Image (tube, rainbow, N blue to C red; front, side, top):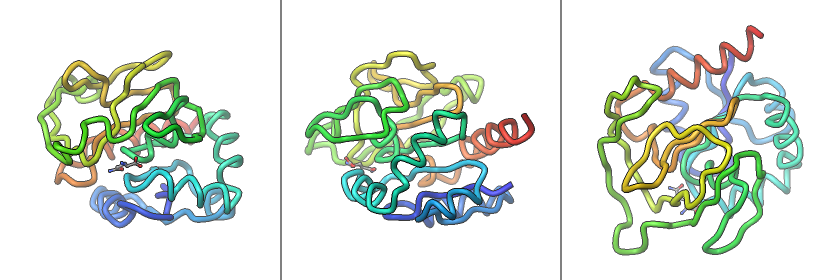
Length: 192
Ligand code: GLN
């Protein structure tokens, strides 16, 4: 099994390091060809505008959208979640529209650029996860998704079948449990 990390910009190395820490092969995905070599994809935090432009330039945008619709497992973190969302505001931006949420970019404002919080997550049986938020989006509407965790009354981690997405950065903590969860999702998808 191989897991890809969308390799255009952002927290690529950090996700690859997490995967290697849990003994899973991870590779950078920057083309349709490398996307075809992986069983699941992590879309990292960074600048969603830059990633969106490069997704379109490389042809990955349409290809990835189609694959996700057909059950390909993806995990979007922060900017990655923005790219997956159905509606993006502040400012309005195009997206893959495969996850039924609306997000407002940089939703916590300029005063609070980054912070972390201990958040109970349903996928960890309610155990706490130290979540790091950096210029994070706020999920302003959660439609047909399962809410895995909330902070300050807003969902911060959601799932719809083969898609999981968090507004925070699990790759910036020492805790590998969310990556392990995603790897199990990918294993299940591969064996079906
Ligand atoms: N503010 C960034 C964006 O809108 C996301 C920040 C992040 O991924 N840490 O794309």
